[in-house]
Length: 303
Image (cartoon, rainbow, N blue to C red; front, side, top):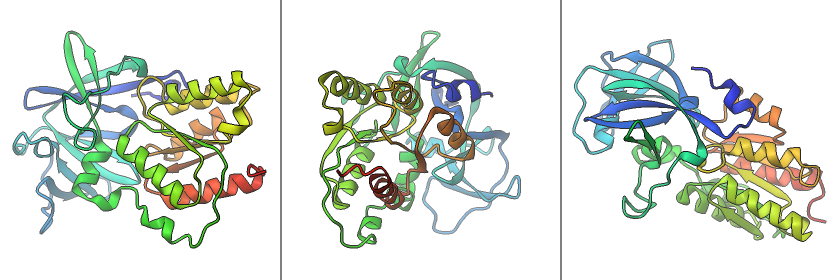
C-alpha cells in the first residue's frame, strides 16, 4: 500500500481501504494503517469500555483491540475476521472488522460530507462518503470513535491554563479543520491563549479561498499571518493547501503549522518536503500554542 507519491506531492488524493461490517461498506485512510492481521484472541481488560475487546502484543507492541461493530451499534463481533492495526494521535489501536475488500484511490473533492439528515455534527462518526461501483462507502471518523471511548485521548483545553498568564495578541491566524468539534476546540484554545484575531474554515479549499481573496485585495498581512491546518479534509487536504501556499511567492512567507492526528515520522518528512514550518499531533494543543508563540516571536508577526 504505497501512499508516498500521493502525499509527498500534495496531489489532493488519498487511498481508502474498504472493509465490511454487518453487510455494509466502510472506509479508512490508508495513511492511518500499520498492517492488517487475522483475528487473534485478546486479553480482556477489567472494567474497560464495552467496545474494548482487550489487549494483545503481535509485534512486541501493546495494542488495544476495539470492536468496531459494537462502536457502531451493530452488536458484538464474532471471534473471527481481521484486525486493522493503526497508528494515529500517537496511539496503537486495532479495529476488529469482518473483511477487507480493497483499496480505492480517490480525490478529496470526490468525498461527500455528511449532512444534518444523517446525524448532528457532534454525534456523527463519519467524516465523508464516497461512491464506488454503485455503492456507498462510509469513511469513519476513527479519532472521534477513540475519543468517545476515552475522552482523555482528545484535545485537552486545560493545557492552556498550564501556560500561565497570557498577553492578548491581534496576530491574524487562519485555521483549516473539517471537524466542527475540533475546529471549535482549537478556536477556544487559541482565544484562551490570547489570540483573538481568528478566521476558521471547514477545509483546505475554503482556507485557500480566503488566502487568495486577501492576496487579491492586498490585505493578506491584515488577515493571515499564520496558517494552522489539518491534513485530512474534504475538497482540499492540508498537504495540497501547504503546497499551493508555499509555491506562490506572494504567500510563501506565511508560516504553516500542520496539526493532525496523522503526524508521525513519515508524515513529518512529507510535510517538510512541502514547506510546512511546524508539525505536531492533534492532542498536543498546549504545544500548538507554544509553536504559534515561537513563530510570532521569531518572525516578528505582532509588529
